[in-house]
Amino acid sequence: MEEEVLIQISNRIKQVRIERKITVQELATKAQVSKGLISQIENNRTVPSLWVLMNIIQSLNLDFNEFFKDITRQKKNPHPVIFKKRKDHQVFEKENTRGFLYYRAFTRTLQGGAADFVILELKKGAKRNRMVKTDSFEYNYMIKGKVDYTIEDKKYLFEEGDSLFMDSRLSHKISNTGNGDALMLVVYFFIAGN
Image 1 (tube, helix red, strand yellow):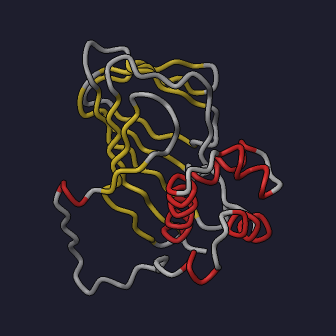
Image 2: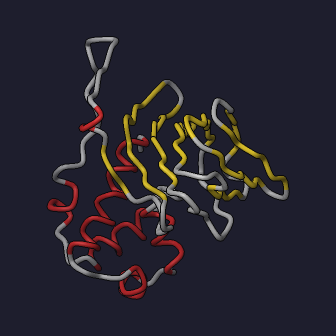
């Protein structure tokens, strides 16, 4: 399954759950999976098996056709240039952490996988309290501000103009340690077959 479709499925699960005022724990209980798995699926950190996906859709009281009606593969663009205005960036919640604002600029399938281009705004003092993993590789470019980036047991001071490439399947967390808001470009590379 192509990555942009998986992102649409994750977003759709979260959107319907929130619209219906169902907590992550309630959905997990109904779907007979862990709360952590629902969170990982909604935040694009893992791909659900077909069985789990079917249980989640049924637990949301949705017809399968209704769930998948707006989920589509991208059509081949005959033009080699794609331009988007800032207002067209899709706001999404990747995690429930105060001060982390995600804006999806592009998601594109590339040869061998997909790439998700995201602008991450970290409000002053924003920090992730626990280590996380994402099933991807990740490129980060610091546009503005200063953050501490902890990967496994090593800490990196990440300042304006710095860049970082990592296997984001390694445990990591980030904290805004600057005097104001921070802004980063994050590109997730999802490799087919990984």
